[in-house]
Figure 1 (cartoon, chains in turn red, brown):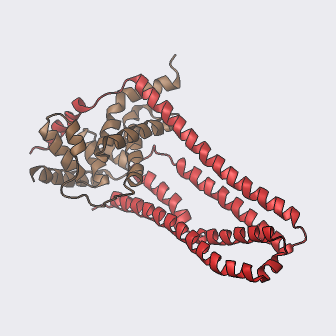
Figure 2 (cartoon, helix red, strand yellow; figure 1 turned 90 degrees about the vertical axis):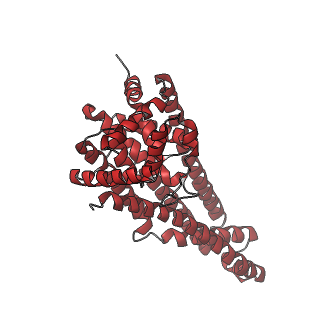
Figure 3 (cartoon, rainbow over the protein chains, first blue to last red; figure 1 turned 30 degrees about the vertical axis):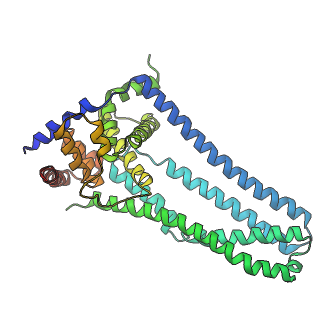
Amino acid sequence: MENNELQKIWRSIDLEITQKSKDELGLLLTSKARQTINKFLCIIIISIIVCAGVLSYVTITALDRKEDLIFLINNLSLGIITTVALLSGLFSWYKLRNNKFDQPLRNWLEVRIRLLSKGLTGRSSKLYLYLIPFLYVLIVLSIHVYFEHKLFLEVLKTEESLIALIVGAPIGIFVSYYAARKIRKYELSNLAFLEDLYGRVINER
Amino acid sequence: MKSTKEEFLEILSNYQGILHKVSLIYFKNASERVDNFQEIVYQLWKSYSKLQNRNSIGSWIYAVSINTSISRIKKISRIEYRETLPDMPDTSDIINELSKNESLKLLLNAIYKLDEIDRSIMLLYLDEKSYDEIAEIIGISKSNVGVRINRAKESLKQNIKS
């Protein structure tokens, strides 16, 4: 088979393609832009609601328990960690979304790998694996102590609370750790896929 | 005077074949191709205002189309991602859509057996792009383009014969 024969065969693909009119292309663009904006707004709104909910709960319950220092420290840590985690999550998601596609494949892969690697293989890459179970413990403690209407240390000394903590906490920690690991595993496989592609692009065999 | 959007749609209308072809070589399923086509249109629109060199519109469209498609492969194949394609790829969807052009079906089947990078390079070669343009779009050296095209061509020919 001659080399240009392949090109000749390929040219016939144009006959198979159904061309879209300008109006159809315009409609495609408008609906995609609308979908993207809705998705973007949805993520922002959910993050704000979660963040505002946690902060309101933390503030209201802290004002109600001004005399309990340990409870205040627990709530303060909960508020700070939730806000920082949500903001940094939103920021990295926004950066990844704005990854420019109008560059050579090799450069595009480099940028995308760099962005993903920062969060997945950097110094604090495994932090959120432990942060999520830790947040879970803080939330459970805060809610439990608040609705027991006793001081933090007093609640922890009661038999029921100890049993509940010994049984409930490990299950919750395990479930949240497992969920965080699953997400991380999926993101790592994405990164491996991009690195594999990059390896094949730069391979000057 | 035309608005930016009208100007963009005019260009898109003239070059839409590239979007169709890139979607075709990466996605066998019709609905995935439609989604990919739409995503490429959106990514092109997003970068249109920053397009400086109006003489290389074709290269810009190829680059955005290839990068967008590659970014979607992993997402879509989350359920069944296979690094190496099986000997008999499932192209029934496309085969049903294409007319009775047997040579084209054979060529397309052979393209599906190439890896993601070689598929892009071969598409550019089959679309008669120069080595310089291919090197610019993929971001590799011109000599490497030559080596890869020869290798992929051999592979294509063997796949077509088998």
